[in-house]
Image (tube, rainbow, N blue to C red; front, side, top):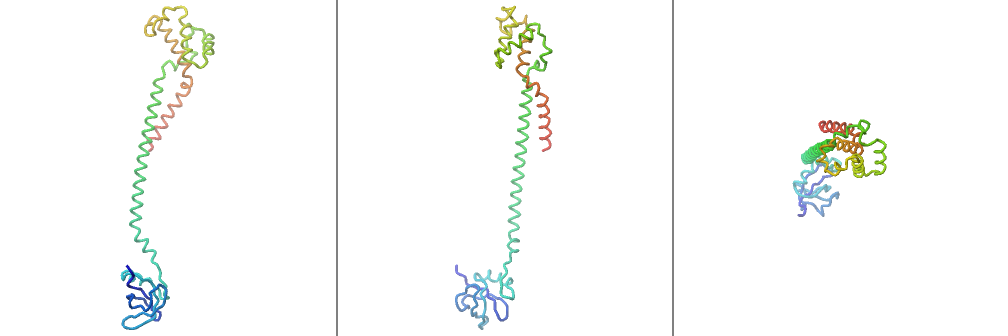
Length: 225
């Protein structure tokens, strides 16, 4: 819709008012000084702005006596304050929700990790806690056992089979039985298991205390959040 009103600054009286564009002689371009009919008389006036009556009237208080128009930037900020406050409040709420979700996931992951580590430690046989020096080598000499280890390299299953044959060298009938049925030679079975476990889990034994400390640290970290 075309502008019907203009806010003009009268150069002689240095005052401003709103007039209809029909009362302006010539095209009402901003900044131009034209003849303007006001209260039945004609005056020289500078066109400050054009638009609706409401808009032009809102600009009158911001026209200075030197004929310049000051934009009320502070009013723009004040009008935007409720919108900005609502926007900040919404963003703050989203951040709080995200933080709460992250803390919840963090606690869940720590709990799962703690349970997994504890389950791993529970699965390590109790014989692993014994040092190899505490084992009785009545069934196989230490030197012979070390030779079997070197022979098998890092294959612990192969080492266990060779060790089993060595332990039952003097009792092949017992060796032919399933392990669960070797009641008579239960101590030999325990010996094989103990040696195999010590050979299989030496690093776990050394790290067991460190793992327990880590679990405790995770618990403290989780509770602090």
